[in-house]
Amino acid sequence: MATFKLVLDNRVKSKNDKYNLSVRLINGNDVMILKYVQMTTEQYFRVFERKDMDKNSIEFRNKSNQFLSKCERIFVEMETFDKARYRDLVYDRIPKEVIKNTDPVLLTDLCTRFLEQKGDIKLKTRQLYQTAVNILDEYKPGVTYWDITSNFLVQFDKDKRDQYSPATISAYYRHLRGILNYFIYKEKIIPSSYQYPFGKDGLIIKKHQPIKFVMSNEEIKSVVEFNDFLSPEQEYARNIWLLLYRCNGINYADLFRMKWTNMKNDCLVFTRVKTEDTSKVAAKQIVAPLIPKNLELIELVGNKRSPYILGLLNDDYITEKDILYKKDWEERKLNASLKYISEKLNLSVDLQLSTARDCFATTLKRAGYAKDVIGEMMGHGNNYISTSHYLAHVDTGKLREISSALF
Image (cartoon, rainbow, N blue to C red; front, side, top):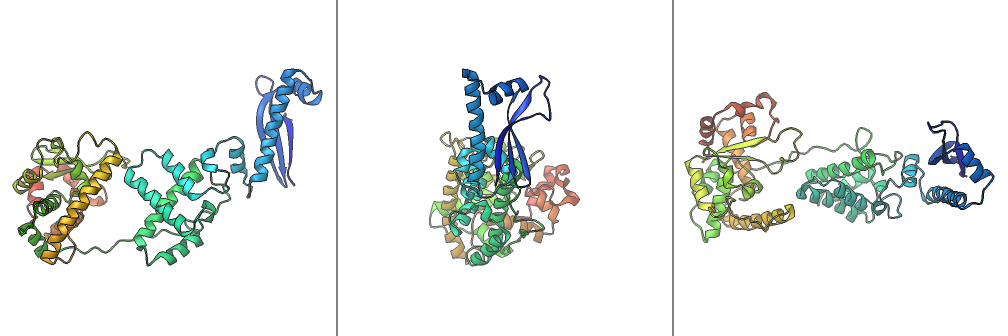
């Protein structure tokens, strides 16, 4: 049975001849010294041994005993005793909104706390963290970090294979791992006694390369030449797809935020939204040459009355959440219009904005360009190490030559 006692820890004296008044906890073979306040041996004698009854002595004695009671109460409330976590609880190092009188902490509470502390995470990424936790909490309602074992994750994988792809499950596990690591190593809410579910002694998160089916050159040409539209919206959607395809396979999220000021020397110069805040080094700029047929497309889809090329943003969209919701709404409308073209041409792959990037890479690969060159144009940074700086030394004439291989 654990014992608690207020003691003057006289092992180390401070420069002002004071010692630490502490609570000494003995729990089996474990001994903990929990510092409270400093005082001299004379003060300790008057307050705790002679028990002076002046106002200051009584008040100090009461507060010291309250600290002792707090140490006892926290020990009793802990289902699993962990010295590091116990010390954090005694000194209020763990936010009360996370504890919620629950031990161990709910995974949903950890996620909320994690997202509050990581204010630099983009909204889209925040949603991915939240989705991963929600899926696990749906699988086991009220799941805590203590429930997250390697066996639990293996069973989740088996039970959900028909519902989620292996790549999706691995993505959930990576986000879960990020949350656990934060509270193990940063805030240290999770005790050292917790058996970490990942790594060499646990579950290895597998990397999955999803199989991608890409349109043939003939199919891509048919999209480029398509003219049997039923509405202006369908033609506009195809032109947007075509602009993404011809401008280095850029993402719609980048084009959506693109401004006229990004046009420099007949090129689009920009940084990918996906990586602008995540790179450990200076963000890589992408240069997409605006050959004549690309300039014609911009004239068709652009709005010169707006600072944004597509003219879909204005001063009303001031938060990242506003911009993301607007972008997603516009993207859904465009993909709905592209569906008609896909069905009309009987394409082997559904025509969506996201396929423009795959088609760009595949077209250049079929034209004989090396993967490192294509990767640099797409903004893959140093993924292709052998010529990672290739395009940094290529003039716009060379870029135009490469882009001429596109349909």
